[in-house]
Image (cartoon, rainbow, N blue to C red; front, side):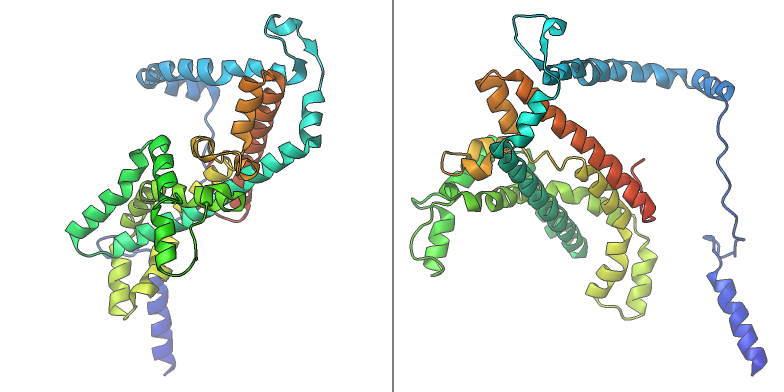
Length: 341
């Protein structure tokens, strides 16, 4: 009896060891430390890959001209900027514009709107994209699967001008499909002016964003699902696992690293709630809930010619986004998850 237990124990330890495709047991290797390159080795590697480096030069020039050089304009946030004067002959006012922003009740409302719409889009975007990818993966009929994928991708290529027009028509009081459907089902007694009630605006933006982008956002999750080892599904079938169990214990854990990376990247855009959709669907009745940071910058910077205040608001948004990105990345690393860098 004791010998049988010892033999079973040895067999379980052997099965727990890594196995190569030929079925041979491999010895577990300790992780090697990555050797840091010396400056001499670095320049030698650059000489060996000089063709690739030359290919990056146009991109670096573009990056500097359009991304880094304009940062000089951030000095306007600390000036009482007047277009007639040279940049460095302006009146310097320090943090006066930032103090005005954080003491202005309207700016705090705009910040609330931006965060609310961003989180709604973030949550709905992730949930719907993952759900659609999982459902598409479970479709066995190839033709129907391709048709469904194509239909779900198509709205992404529509301009927000077109989408905003469709949303306005669908929510219209005069024969709008949403009002007609709700009235016929007995849910409401009379049509609702959806775009005239500010409290509904965040939900409308979230639903419109999901309709437009859910198919496109699901592509990367479909790619991650196809990378999962199919032997895991075969083993689950042999063990009698249901479809829901396969999704819970194989599919969702398999796409978890992709989800974490995308979550980190999207946290950096938490103050980017959009511009076109809000600008096109906004009206005097819902302005209190529709105006976000981008529209605030446009209104003060262009309409009111207050370039300094608009620059301060844009600078605040950029700095906060960078801090959130690095913070989310570090938190993911501390929790043992995949990191962006």
